[in-house]
Image (cartoon, rainbow, N blue to C red; front, side, top):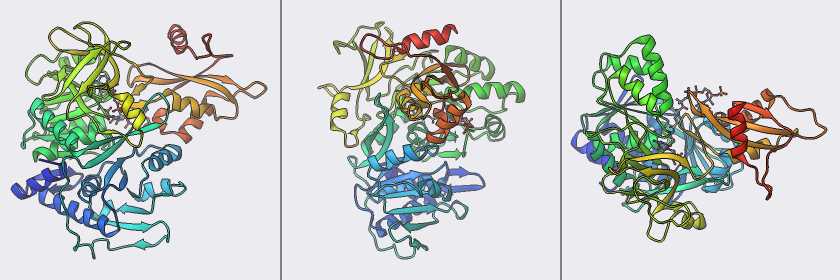
Length: 515
Ligand code: MLC
Ligand code: AMP
C-alpha cells in the first residue's frame, strides 16, 4: 500500500459495505468514504489546486476532516494540520510559514481566519457538517465570491493515487526558539509506520477503535485514524473526550476492541470508574502516549480495570518510535523498544557516541518512518540528523539490558500538559508584550491531572501598577491557545541569572518546589 488514500480505495473495492467511521448518528462505509474523498479531490482540482500546494485543515473531529485530509492528498496537495484552539498569532505564523493556498474549515473557523493577513491564501472551503462530509462551499478571498454547488462541474478531472515519496502532511512542532516549525512527512513515512504499528499491536480488519483524541495531532490522526483506514477496520469518532461517555460507550458496545489516550484521559477514566463502575466489556488493548504515564497510574489502572496499559513513545517528526510489547511484559515507567523495521539508540549528548545499556543520554531514532525535514528550514533539518541518518529526538533516556527504553528528561525546554506541548519561550515572549511586565520566565511544575502545569514567574515594570495574576492569565488566554496559559503566576523582584545573563530556570523551579 503506497498511501493511506490507496488503502481506503482498496477497502472500498474489497469490503464496500464495511463501516469505516461511526460518528454521532452516522455510519460511513468504505464505499461512501472513498466516493466522498474522490469528490473532494476533484473539487480541489477544479478550484485550481496544484501538486504540492499546501492546504490547511482547521476543523474539529468529524468525518469531513477525514474526507478533506485524504481528498487533499489524492489531489496532490500537502495537508497542513492546525490545532483549532490556536489564536490569531499562532494561526498567522503557521499559515504564512507553510504558504497555505487554501484552508478547509467550518463556519466557526471562518471567523477566526477573517482578520488574518496571509498573502498566499486565496480560497476557503467551508465544510457543511450538517449536510454530511461531502458537502461544502468555496469562498474566493480575492473577489469574496461564494461558489456553491461545488460538485457540479468537477467530474472531468482524473485522479492519480499518491506515490510513496509524495509529500503528504505538515505537522507543526517547536524547538527552543518559540516559533513552530513544520515537520514534513511523505506517504512512505505514514504507511511504513502504520504497517509497523499494525504488526506490533496486532491490528486487524475486525478491530473497532474508540477515538476521542484530536485529529489535528499525530496521536489521533496518524495512529488512530491511519490504523483504522490502513487495516479496513472501524472507528467510532468523538468530537471530544468525556470520561463518562467513554465508560458508557464501552459498556454498551462490545464490538470496541481498542482505546488510545494520553495519561490525563486514563486518570479521568479511573476517577470516573470509581463513580460509575467498570464497563461490562473492555477493549482488548488500551494504549497510552504523548506524555509520560506514571508507574502509579499504570498500576492503579491494572488494579481497577484488570488490564495493563501498553505505553508507547512518539513525536510529530517520526510518528511512533518505541512500544511496549503486545504479548511480552508491559513494563511500567518504560516505553519499550523500537517498532519492527525501525531503530533506536541512546547517545552521549556531548560526544554523540552510542552509550551502553543503563547509561542515560539522548534518544536517537532511524528508519522509514522518520520525516523528510522541516518545511523550508534546511539548517534546522541538517542539525536534527547526524551523518548516518540518525534523528536526534531531544528526549533523554536510557535502555535496559533487555531492550526497554525509559524516558527521563528532555534536552529541549518543553512542558507537556495533558498531552499538549507548550514551549516556555513562546509564553515568555507573549508575557513580555504585556505593557506592565518587564520580564518573565515560564517553567513546568508537576500537576496531578495534566502531568505538568505552566507557571509564569513575572517581574513587573518599574513605576507601573503590577498586574494581577488573573489579568495575566486572561491576557495569555486571549493571545495564545488556551492550554498554554499559566495556571499560576508568581511575582518576583528579579529573575535569577548567571554571569552571562542567562535566566537560571533550574533555580526558579527549585524555589517553586520548596515554596
Ligand atoms: C484543555 N485545557 C488544557 C488542556 N486541555 N489545559 C492544559 N493542558 C491541556 N492539555 C483547558 C482548555 O484550554 C480550557 O481552558 C479548559 O481546559 C477546558 O477545555 P476542554 O477542551 O473542555 O478540555 P478537555 O476536553 O478536558 O481536555 C483535556 C484533554 C485534552 C486531555 C482531553 O487536553 C486532549 O485531548 N489532550 C490530547 C492532546 C493530544 O492529542 N496530544 C497528542 C499530540 S501528538 P479555558 O481557559 O478555555 O476554560 C504527540 C505524539 C505522540 O504528542 O507521541 O503521540
Ligand atoms: P510532539 O512533538 O507534539 O509530537 O510531542 C512529542 C513529544 O512528546 C516527545 O518528544 C516526547 O517528549 C513526548 N512523548 C511522547 N510520548 C511519550 C511517552 N510515552 N512518554 C514520555 N514522553 C512522551
